[in-house]
Amino acid sequence: MTNAPVKDQRRLLDLQALDTRAAKLAHQRRSLPVLASLAELDGRAEDLHRAMVEARTLASDTRRELTKAEADVEQVRARATKHQARLDSGQGVSRELQALQGELAQLSQRQAVLEEIALEVMERLEGAEARVADLEAQERAIGEDVARLAAERDAAFATIDAELATVSADRAGVAAELDAELLDTYEYARRRTGGLGAVAIHGHRTDGAQVDFSLSELAAIDAAAPDEVVTSEEHGYILVRLDDAR
Image (tube, rainbow, N blue to C red; front, side, top):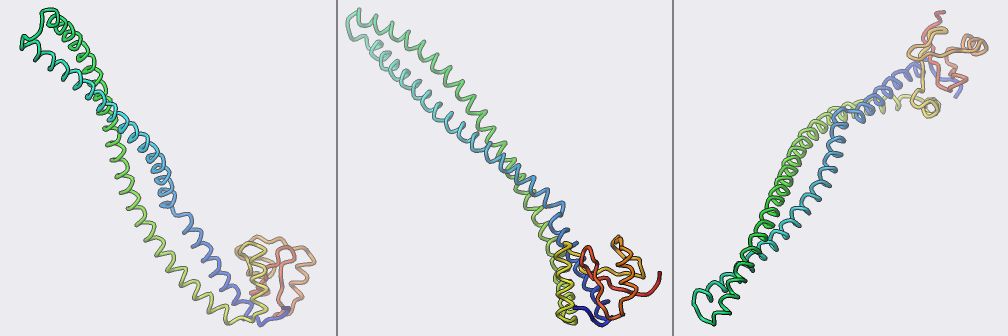
């Protein structure tokens, strides 16, 4: 494309404004502060999940340990009760009764030791279960924060997406008015520059972008007919001339 009506060239500035607005909205959507907050909560939730797995495993293991300790105590207690009942009955020879008394004393000592072990395990279990309860409370709190922030994010997304839809519709309307080849030149420049397809220029002064022109380029700009499409030598974007001011 070497030529296009002046009004079409100037219409490119409207298209550029819409594309710039769309790019800003897309960046705003990607960089909402609430997204960083949600990402931080997600990381905390992962750490909390790992801690919860460890805490629940410890509590489960300690619970089994307590069950065994209590069973050991009960076994010794049952044996002592049986021996005591036989001793109380007075049945058996004196030597056997003396042996029972000795075993009862040993069982009493053994029971005291096992009860102390069971008590220590019980205390550890209480600590483990308290740790699980604390982590569960933290999980609930994080869940509530996530729900609140997700709602905030969704509301922001809805507002931005609505504006993006409007910008997209307006852009489609402007693009439909332009010659396909002129539009292709604009789009090619946008791809090369990462978003900039047209720049307004008043004489030798550009708007919105700092551009340094060579002397030969300035001469070409000055010599170009009004309907000639002028592009930047270095970047390729279209230079939309708005007046002849110097």
